[in-house]
Length: 415
Ligand SMILES: C[S@@+](CC[C@H](N)C(=O)[O-])C[C@H]1O[C@@H](n2cnc3c(N)ncnc32)[C@H](O)[C@@H]1O
Image (cartoon, rainbow, N blue to C red; front, side, top):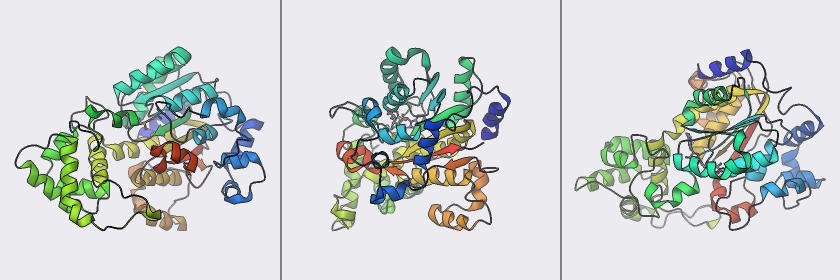
């Protein structure tokens, strides 16, 4: 099995790092203590120290002075990594000799982590998108050249990609940190020709990896009405899935649907009457564009995004050295549920007979028996350092719209 393979590799190999990556030393203990008990209460307004307040995303910069150089982007920065401060905090105090960034993108997080952790010897950056990799290379090479190993591939093959990267450097063993910032990048969305955006005219493509065989065009123009309905329902959580699937099939009978705007216009027209007078979102926020959920569904299908998460998360956890940390940023509930579920299972909180299982099942809709499919934990291997995910502060949400739906969960490998 995937996890077992890499764990075995790790166990057999000479430890690459001296001691546990995050678990030793006063700085590490302090950071871990901050990550554990009492932080959420502190956030609720009982902070006695500027450090706790700052950690919780407050405006006091008391404890973040030393991070100011790495966690602040100028207002007009071309790429702003999401929840960057929280990501840096979650690895604070860790001895990150080997780090895997499973979604390198424009290297926003990578740059910050590498600056904050000069001890990094190898930073493996994976991305399915060759354009992202070449941009990341340009950014990282001058400053961190010998430390970086960039890998084109899908993190669905996490174990083999990481093993190959380590081997290419003559290394073996586990890794000290893993980060995945899921989904598409703003760079991909903003390029019309990639066909991700319903706001921009482009071909129906949506592939993160342009060499993969199935694009949005095939999904939209060749899936049966039933298959389309299923992905709209399951991956878009789209209430009007029947209506949209029917309209797509009727429309394409006259000729293929070729562009993003042709699809979004069709969705807008066919759902107009059903959405008119629809409920406003909580807090009176503006309703989302009618094609948002359908585009998310098609994109998830094209890139096999949920399957990739399900197969990679156990491998990522399995690859960590004891004391190593994993952090995952998700952008919608289908992703976050998977991260939460896998972290809970690997932290031993969802064992059979544990009454927390039923709570977990109620929340995720996944039965305990399905655990094996997820590569479930043989025993607890993770410690959750914070029960609730980090979300963007108001200030970040204001600055970076993409951060508004982001949730960041992280955990530490125990053994
Ligand atoms: C949100 S962006 C990452 C941004 C990055 N953290 C930064 O700060 O620049 C996500 C990136 O992950 C890549 N990606 C998403 N899913 C992937 C997968 N399953 N395998 C490999 N790369 C993936 C996308 O191509 C995209 O470039």
